[in-house]
Image 1 (tube, rainbow, N blue to C red):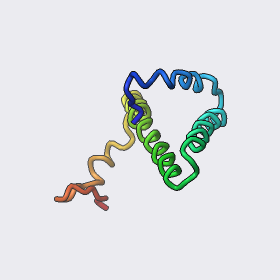
Image 2: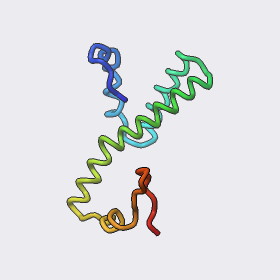
Image 3: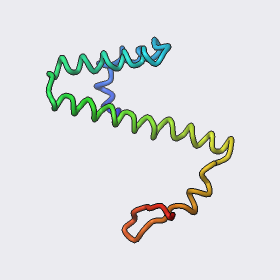
Image 4: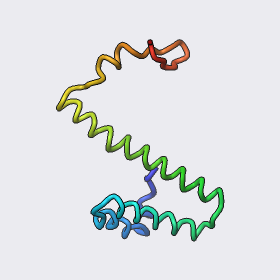
Amino acid sequence: MPYIEESERDRFAGVNTFGYACNKAGELDYVITRIIQGYMKKNGVSFATFAVIAGVLVLVLFEFVRRVVNDYEDMKIKDNGDVYEEKRQTDYRKDSAGVYYHNG
């Protein structure tokens, strides 16, 4: 999770400007890649380092979807109507163990 103590945030103040400098996906990719390379130089090239980086990237994605994308999608559902309404109510069931399965 991206939540560090406020007292630690000053060390990373410059990072806030990186995103504003990016105009294209490739530029955002470059900035993220450079941050990862710096982490690897500091922590060494090893499976453990790769696992930490991969895990962080996955969790960043999950948190972004949870906190940003889902809210946007919910707003668009309200604006335009939900295309999955019937599927959500009829096509899936939960068994006694709480596992969802397709009802087809």
